[in-house]
Image 1: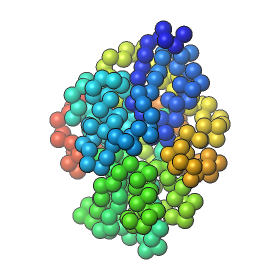
Image 2: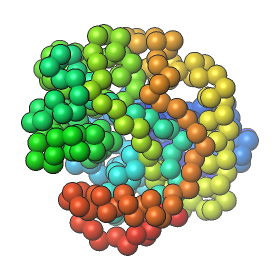
Image 3: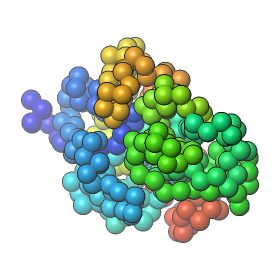
Image 4: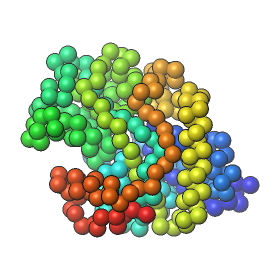
Length: 289
């Protein structure tokens, strides 16, 4: 029985990133691997908790990990480094997550067609998340560091609504809001695929980590075999505005988790340090299992 197995508690991220975990729980893949994996809440709870003025370590998933009510969560690669470096709880990046997703700069503005058109144009992101870091990478080489203008917005659905209601010219979103934006007539200025880090607490044993990732990889195989069986989870944040069959396959895919190579960490860490996103106090590889 699941109640007799070791409990692993995961703080929720957006469904597009958490889908392998959700499938693993639904189809009892973690139980088969000898674990009782539970989500500490629903992604929709973030609507009541997270806001644009909140420091990143006080956001729902980060706070759950910091206070010990969650054993892990996934977040963009850059943020996984940031949260572990600044947080109080001992942990590490156990792997690169199974979701390979795009963040896209989208707009309704016909004057904005390429990244070069975005010089000094405010682009709405959520600071210190994947939308923020990818926006900088997409724009910096096109317009130069001095002409990248970042505006701090809210959660993905809030950024989409700001664009939809013409309150902002350009926003950065992931699925399902890329597909929804295209459905509603927006166009893409730029898109960047990226992985994320699986942040885990030091309390999980190597055997538990392996069992967790093995089960997650089985979930990935099931998603890839029948994507639209599970697409309703990804579309849920649109609250019916995007039907599962309208979700495009182009902007997210899933693969087995990869263990985080310290050399990749080093390149990422150096990039963050050069732009002031870290105080540069960690040794390369110190946060990587």
